[in-house]
Image (cartoon, rainbow, N blue to C red; front, side):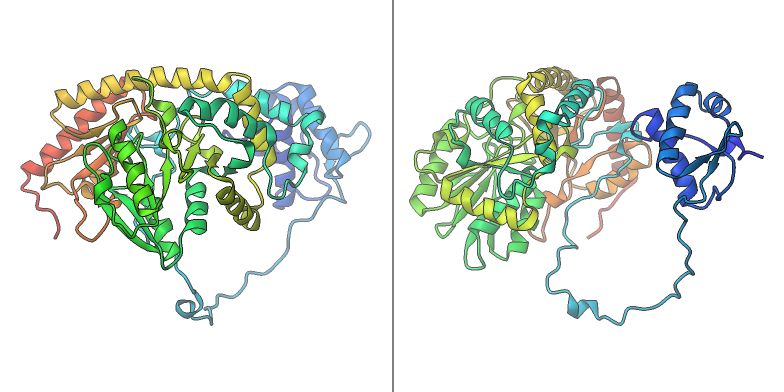
Length: 495
């Protein structure tokens, strides 16, 4: 008797062709022990009807499994689990035991326990996901990305996936960045001044490791990107938070003994303040005066849909003291983890050597796929399409915030993808976020962006890259109602 056809099913989230999904389904059944040696499989016709696929698809899948010795064929009788099929592992459960290691002593340096917030992996299932940094899959050009990935897998480009570049990068991607991306920011750079990274955060880590020691001092914005603060704490350098104002980082507040200045001039993180040209020049003058290096994190310049972005600090740099950090994570998708560093050759040489000692280089196939996507014009089309959608959502957000009397603490002058918000001082936005999550709304509490123990508790960030325009107004209404309910209930924040 054949195995019941009802025991065969395709996973809803499975990847790959139907043929490969069927192969994987049967192989997993054998490896897990559900299908035993000698058991007969359903006929190709019966399984095809059950799965809702063509018979030839099932036949090809069976044939591949036959070739790999998972199945055997007995003339006109049908297909069976092969006697030579891989056997499921056989072992007895290990007895429970306790570690004899004192991990408090064994761990030499701790990296956990920071204030970096977590975001639910199932954020897209929430009705009102005002989460920052997540992509709207409906806007992404999946078809052309897939074609570019297939092109990168072709025989002509196969070496980009199989070769070990050691400390080098895909020359096609580097050339595109040098000739197309950087000139849009007013930056001129040679290939040897560019290094591909695993996203902007990896670029910041490489920069901190190369430039900072326990004796050196870094100045950071306050509030700032919380992951940067964690990176600098791990480097054990001296860190000085400098409170930002409506124009971003004030140069005259930077201590004279600062070695490295980290800044986000185009879209200050998280307040979205845009640094005016006069202050940009003043910042470069201050850096020159105290002989400091400036690290410019330009993480969101592609979302300048209201008007062209201001020139990058790097484009104004006449001394070679600015290191530029760029990323494709916001403009393509965050899971890509692809960014780049631009700086003087001595710095890039050291960053390249450090990267090679840790991870060699970002995957060659990903680099080549991205280079095709960029060079064939798909990237520019995506940026325009995304800009249009973000402009519409920003308008809806602003209207809803005004209607429901919420307070904006900061918004990008050139665009961006979020609003920096201020709740009444009585409101702890960590508690607010928990209450909102229970009713389908996700927000990002703002406490983790601030330095020190006396962090303001009433700030929060609302992203609009991941929520459809049609849901924005209702979501803002829920937030406003929840804040009023907390105030009206005599809520007292914890001390």
